[in-house]
Length: 558
Picture 1 (spheres, rainbow, N blue to C red):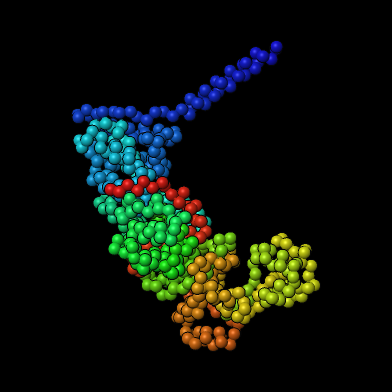
Picture 2: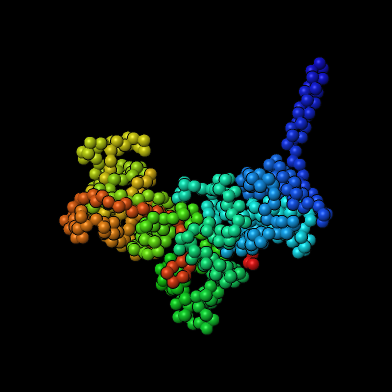
């Protein structure tokens, strides 16, 4: 009975503390309409409202219709520099730069951005306030000014650094404008520079990016009302399947209506479709072809948009020349500017053992190399196989080597003792044509222990699906690549020296006087030399993951 008053007093104190905390964190409402008479100082009133809005935002509020301003810290700094003076309007009239920015926001879909995420709806509503007459509502003009600034800042940042956030795979060391740089960039929007040119200068200048951007516009305009999205190719009779194939290929422009009942025309059209989607062009609707046909136009738009964003994560320029391995297209290219110096089919990692995306430089290559098995393969494949049958090592041309380089008799080892944490030996595959690396290995520094190499299973380059390795990249034209790497080093490597070493099976490491920059990346669509969009399978599922991180597209055409 004595404790009850004390408990009541403590509860009362707790309630008072909570009420005080709520009062301290209460978000003040944003400024309401503030109509200024014709004789009043409108811009001064707008300045006052901008200050109030920024204070409101700093307390955790929103600007308009739940649209939080982008990079509020940088935008607050920008208005502090301008002493809260409006930037996009003058005496109630939107400036020419504001009109241009509104057009750029509406057409942002042409660059793979989402107009809605750039405050298009709010900007259009506020800019059209009171018809075409100059607005005298200082609160509306303040909101409009801040949203204009946020729209420019967000568009500039997304075009230069990408929509997706940075991660360890990206090439850029810088991942965002700092506040000072972003503020100076905003100021340039109204200092004599063409706003369109300024926005354009922030985008990548790579040819493939420019071609993909044009392809996005063409694809969007051609398929504004996609007709094949509702098509089903399952459980059809042969005649029904042929009919659906014809309609689907007609919709996407692979054939015209005159051939819709011509089976040979449908087969020819299907072969063209297969060529554009990295499929074997046999004209038959196999499993992978059917899967590609069932992808909707909206999904293809998102695929183009995502790959545009991947290009934005590259640095502002690339070296000349450089080697690019594109994992989903099973392709290696060497580019010198816009000139293609070498191209080759490649085999990449299985979905279970994917080839990593990385950036490095080829430093040397080895002829007739040993293959030192990585620990992941030893634990997963070799230990169980040897315990079951020690002849596995002989069959696969493998030898055990200790830390001093001495070959050890595997029969004298207790293989059941070894595990991931304890294996004081090296397993290597002896040189020769049976070696999994083939006769050459190209080395570059990386933390994944992967490299480019030849293979003893060269027939696999004829396969349609070539995600077949443990993670390394097997190169079909390894001989052309090795000769390209020493093309300028005639003093040490005369033109026919490589051929002699290969013929005589000489174990040799060739160090390069000029390292070749190498990039292994994941692009699931590109534009070929004929201007056609080429799509590849999302073999590792990266598209499915990253598309969810993009701003949801509105795809509203202007």
